[in-house]
Image 1 (tube, helix red, strand yellow):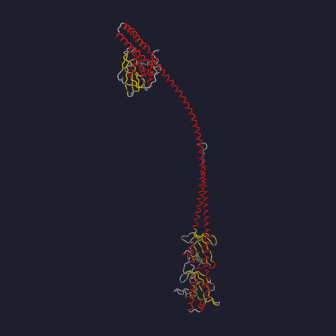
Image 2 (cartoon, rainbow, N blue to C red):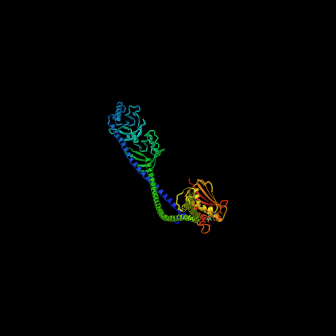
Image 3 (tube, helix red, strand yellow):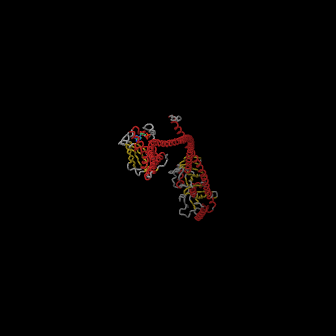
Length: 621
Ligand code: ADP
């Protein structure tokens, strides 16, 4: 473990994540709380907007309703101005008068746009009506039980919303006493249809309802809510309503609106009637003159949806903020890591560069040394080469030295013969024996030619050679070499034999060099046989083709090569010959020459005894 690695303390290890967990939990709580605040705020704002628009609606609706009704307020009071009406009430049996009043009421009703107009006597019985032509005309009906008639008979101008007892049509009833000379004669009643208002409410959207003093809904944009109550009716009230038959036979059960929250005296949040029961903002406005209350209900679902959206948006923004913070932190951390990695890389790069520079320098040094070494080696090679060629030359000279005795003899003999024959030739010429003299001269010529041949061979042998390899006829090379040792062979009575196959064989080498090798091998063989005094003495040369090689073997019947000296045979200056006789260079040089032409020189001990040297050379075409 590295020295600066953090040591793990179990307590610490446990505390860290726990603290972080607590932090996260706190943050989450704060976020949720913030979302809650956003929800509340958005809801309140939406409710505020709803309240404003609801208030405007209520203003409009109440004003338009009041306008409609106020148009008719004065109408019942105008009938006491008509003489026919007064006369009819004073003379109940006059049918002509009744008809006149009926027609009059009919006209006024049409002009005023009211539903019906009728006039009752002090007993509450209808004397004339605008709908007198209709089969269900009010004429003759007793309506004394109707509160507005009752009130009017009592001298209080009546205003009343109720459902008609004859046709069941709801309407607003205006009633006022008809006075003549300060005495009440009857009551004039005008009924106006205000249900048309509902259509306007329904068209504008939103739920509107109109309740009477008891909380009975008698007009509503939601038809099903009509003739329900906002709260359960007290038994006394219920009884009174039944008596007056204000809402005829409607059961007047509670609507089931439940107040959830009171905002102020005129507004609150209510749960709608079952089964839907959605939350609504409820706002109301009193119509003081009629003792009514108009209620406007706005659906809260959109407000709550927008509040939910606000909360969600808040949560999303919070999540985004957290993600941004985390992202920034991660980026910062990554940047730091990247910076560190870059620095490490730079360091490694610098080290590598240093290393490369060092290695390059040492390589250059090595190259220099190698170059120097090469130069030294080349020089050594050159020296070696020179030494070798000098050695070859020395070897030749050594052979020549050895041969010189024989050669001197070889030349002296013909020279003596030449002198004798020349002397003889002169005597023969003087004596006139010209033919004999000519024969002598021929012999002289032959002897000179032979001597020339010998010296030519010697010159060729001694010449330094640097020729390129060429096709050398093996038989010719053997003959030329033999020529140099011929005399020794004869003197030492050595049986020489050139085996068959030797004709038409060509080795790829230099003829002069091959001769040199052969002379060496022949001399060695003769030496060995001479020193051992062996008999009979045999020297056999054989040449044969082996694939693309030419093998020339030189076999003698000497003592052979002892095993202990076989390894040193080709070493320079190795010799077993007495001082002054051998230099120990012959085989070393021969081996070197053969190798130069891509060949091999090796020694063998044939089973029949003696020694055999084999020259192995590439064959020439
Ligand atoms: P040198 O002839 O001057 O001694 P060489 O290199 O030619 O040098 O020969 C090395 C030695 O190899 C000889 O001294 C001799 O001992 C041995 N040798 C060479 N040829 C023969 C042979 N035909 N038979 C036996 N020994 C040989």
